[in-house]
Length: 324
Image (cartoon, rainbow, N blue to C red):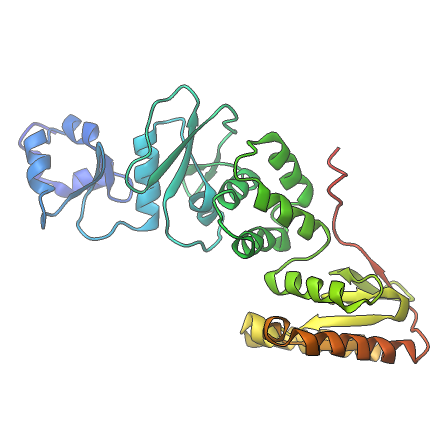
């Protein structure tokens, strides 16, 4: 496109861009002068400069995808999305915060605006997600977890990915050991909890109440099967010696009719198999913990009072010390 002719075909510029994001160097190649870029990026203009050397070909807030594209353009061809920005490309809903990128240790790109740049000697092989270069999910997840400031957000972040089955405890343990120790304290705590089969924030609180109850060992999120090996359910908590199940009620926690229907069906299957089931709403774990502990003890005594049904439990998760 000859210098000065680009204004006759703005659509051609957009087609060269990525979702409306383009480098100033590319605009120069298309014949757009620096003064023209400056004029169009003035306050109220049709374009905006969202990062040094990176232009958004519209005004208004950039979308999360446009922010990610701009961050990669700023950081260079070897850069990768990581953290929550990469997780969103893997299909996880994450809040719109800074865009984390990884670059080789010898690059000198600096964090700026909404971009957090991390230089690393462990630059992983990229995975292309929706056309963007991303760190593998275990790395992206732990990079996001290292930036969490409290346990509950860290728990929720890691537990969701493990529950989906997209990443194993073994993979996360290996990645955590191989990476920097900076910011790793909370992820390490959560991995120990997840390895104990505690998968959500309410279940973490539930585990603490069980520890206060003085009851025998409780298994978390184990499969329960009948004498023929047929699947019955996966209760949140299980005391195997008396076949006692503790179920954290999904009506309040999941707030979805289909989830509640599955909860009721699971509870019915357990009761039909002779299992004593205690349902508890998540809010009670925080606001009425003494009553919950009394309910646990009462249902345990009830389970003790009848013959134990022929059911058994088995773990669904790998142990952290099996990292091989």
